[in-house]
Structure formats: structure tokens, C-alpha cells
Image 1: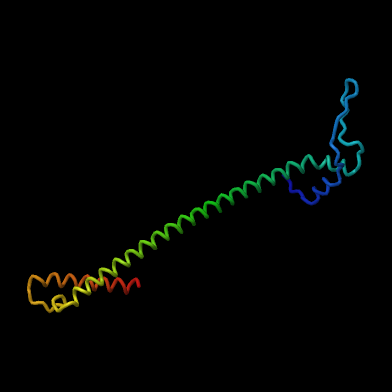
Image 2 (image 1 turned 90 degrees about the horizontal axis):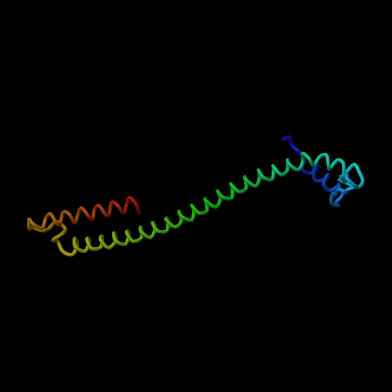
Amino acid sequence: MPERDWQKDWELCEKADPEPWYAEVYAQRVMPYICEHATPGNVRFIAEARSALPYWLQRVRELEVKWLAETEEKIRLRYTKTQLEEENAKLRQRVRKLEAQVAAMREALEGLMYSDGHFRGECSAFRCHPTCEKARKALAALEEEGTNHG
């Protein structure tokens, strides 16, 4: 379909008579009247309308399809963004809970280790040593985790 100039086609529409087209019946014969006066504006409009109307209807359809696709994409992206924001909020809440648990564990371990010399490695009882060592390693791991992510 050849390209058309919208402004020129619109000017053709404006130059045509606004009255409706009609046909009159004379005896057994139909006399079609497209316009009462075959003015240059009417004649040109009639001639051009045959190709202009299909052209513009096709362009409108193409633009509608494009607009609809873009609108659907925007809706999908907005929905995805909302889902990601909700997931992010849940994950942040989970992180806060885990950080609180880690802080409580650290406080408990530090309390055990530093309450007396027993857990600082100063204990003399053989059976207590594995517990002391585990507590020291757990605290060191928590401290390392805190420096890596804090």
C-alpha cells in the first residue's frame, strides 16, 4: 500500500460536502447521486477515498496493535516490579530476624565465654575443653561473618 499524507487526506475530507450521499429511483432505473454538484473538492474526495480510507484504517490498526502490545508489556513489567518489591520486603524482614538471632547467639556465647575463666580456655578439666573450643570457634565464625557482611 503506497504511503499517504494524512494532512492532505484530511484536507480532502474537509473540502467534501458534508451532506450524506443518496440514490434516487426513477421508474425502473436507479440514478445514483454521490453528490448533487460535481465540484472539484467532491470529485477529488470521492476518487481519493477509495485508497485513502483503507490506508488510514490499516495504519490505525497497526498503531492499535503496537499500542496494545506496549501497554500489555508495561502492565507485565509493573506486575513483575510489584512482585519483586514484595519479595524484597519479605527477604529484608527475614534478614532482620536472622540478624537478631545472630546477635542473641553472640551475646549468649560471649556471656558464657567471659563469665569466668572456664570458657576462655583457662579450664583444667579435660571433659570441658571440647565445649570451650566449640564456643570459641562459633564466636569466631560469627565475628568473621559480621566483618564479611557488615
